[in-house]
Figure (cartoon, rainbow, N blue to C red):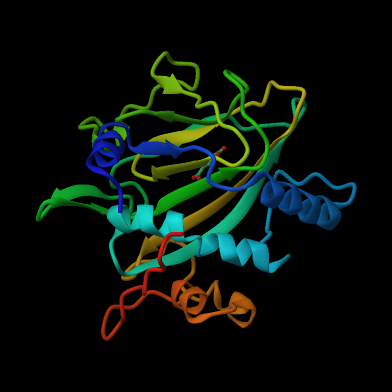
Length: 243
Ligand SMILES: O=C(O)CCC(=O)C(=O)O
């Protein structure tokens, strides 16, 4: 579970970064698998979960699940995944979106009964470093608690934060945070994997969209995370020990 200090940070900012979560050899393997799959193509958005069990294992990474247990609770599910990549000459629609109670109210951030209640949560794993002002992921820190929902700052506003990340780090944010994308300025490429989790009762994506991946699941934990949303008789996740 998150420490009090980590909960304070997530509550304050709407995001938190954990450093050095994925070993370098796994980062290299994932990059090689994606490179082999894409060949000479360079899609800005791509699917990867089907490529190798390493990606399904990352979905069920014990440390990740332990952290987002504090954010989503015991009945979490995977909602959807995709990868993002950008080059300095990629055409990017710079934007900020999301925000408290956006998307039919699904993007929630609330405290009750001495804990937080969240909707869709993004776990982003950069597979390439992000240096200061490279662009890519941006957000307005604290905006998940904003009381003014008809105003969104410009993407170049001083309120916009562009976190630096190393391959192997893990960035977690709530979709209730106003967030989006800035053009990529670095000569190196951007590449990140996004795993989005929901409470067991809700779905952002089509509720059956994960069924094609069920046959790739290697254990009960992975199968449980791939369950469609429902409430009645749903068992909580059987959280693995953290080594
Ligand atoms: O990382 C990005 O460029 C944007 C991600 C995003 O908008 C999202 O996860 O909803």
